[in-house]
Amino acid sequence: MKGGKKMLKYIIEGGNRLEGEVEISGSKNASLPIIASTILNQGKTVLYNVPEIHDTKMMFEILKELGGSVIKKNKKYIIDTSNINRFEISENLMRQMRSSVILAGALIGRYRKAVFSYPGGCDIGARPIDLHLKNFEKLGINISKNYGNIICSCDKINGEKIDLEFPSVGATENIILAACLADGTTVITNAAMEPEIIDLQKILNRMGAKIKGAGTNKIEIQGVNQLKKEVKYNIMPDRIETGTFLCGAAITGGNIIIKNTNPIEISPVISKLEEAGCKIETKKHEIEILAPRKLKCVDIKTMPYPGFPTDMQSIFVATLTIAKGTSIIVENIFENRYKYVQELIKMGAKINIEGKVAAVKGVRKLYGSNVKAEDLRGGAALVVAALASKRKTNIENIEYILRGYENLDKKFNNLGAKIKIVNEGG
Ligand code: EPZ
Image 1 (cartoon, helix red, strand yellow):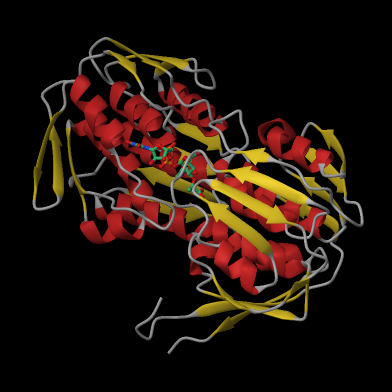
Image 2 (cartoon, rainbow, N blue to C red):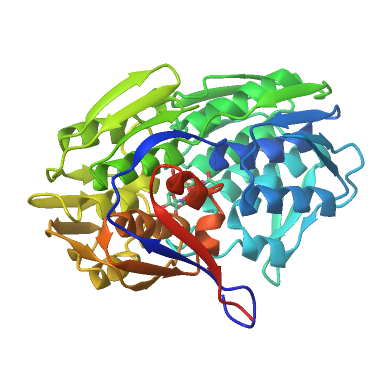
């Protein structure tokens, strides 16, 4: 991020085994659609366990820009959207955070209108929203485009049968939000099954919605007249943050206990780490990992939930750079999610990319270097690699990482890491 803006970087001194306990924050990817869902509720919504990260702060800013009120009291957010009187999400905000497209479904659901710009691609791919738009039209929403803006409007929303060509998380969430106050029932088949969608269903039903099936590939939304309840909700823990700390322990031969988490939601990562030689014990809200001195190579294929999560691909590849043998990784979800690899190679990793396949040949050691984060999870991968590297690693552009992780440096330092944040900006 240039132009005199803050240029924050991490300086990480690697080589320490991680030991101790860490508490996981609330889920970024559950928080964003849940914050959008408060637009549908005419009553006040109180949210607990919202992670203090850039993306949630941005969502609250957008709610306020639309006329909503957001009051932070101790650790909770009190949200009142009854005075929303604007329905346009500015291009600048959409550019800063493409996941703000999730507000469209809620705005249309409540006010029958929304204007937003194409979120545009980002660091991991084109990120189209064709599945969102084509299914909005199926619900009876008129969509027109001018000068890059998308204008959605309708008199009423008609419940419909919708079959998703791909189990898109965002499209599933946006259709649910738009269909809560529809005339009639909407049934989504081939729906995404991610746990964050179960969290969204839970809070919407507390507001008075009638939704069932989240977590399966068939979700039914029976339209109701209004949502008007005083709702309190505790956001689920972040399963990708959990996976990030598991990998931090794995790459440093560490032994940590992860608290405030849900092991079931990260089970594909747990089984792959066990295959790599880690000993893992789980309780209802806790995971203990004991890593071997040397990890074994494993093969990974990212898939929609409940398969191995694409958000853990880069972080797991970083972990495998010093494993024994060669690991084969296939990224099946996003078309451009290997940008971080060139940075790992600067640190001594041996990785070959052929299309969506990465071959990671384990090396004895990584060496600290000057590297750059280019997206959220790619940046997290560089942090994990730096924890096990000899010498110091400088990671620039850590604003990407701060979008999705709350106090990542402090949490790792409490486990024995040596991470410093430095502001190099003007
Ligand atoms: C959500 O993004 C997550 N973001 C992503 O996490 C996550 O990687 C992704 O789901 C997959 O699990 C949030 O929840 C805020 P998709 P989303 O729609 O909804 C294609 C992170 O690091 N597609 O399931 O955008 C798309 O191009 C972020 O926390 C279409 O073709 O993901 C991609 O290839 C990164 N047309 C695939 O589907 C569409 O209309 C999966 O995308 C929509 C998506």
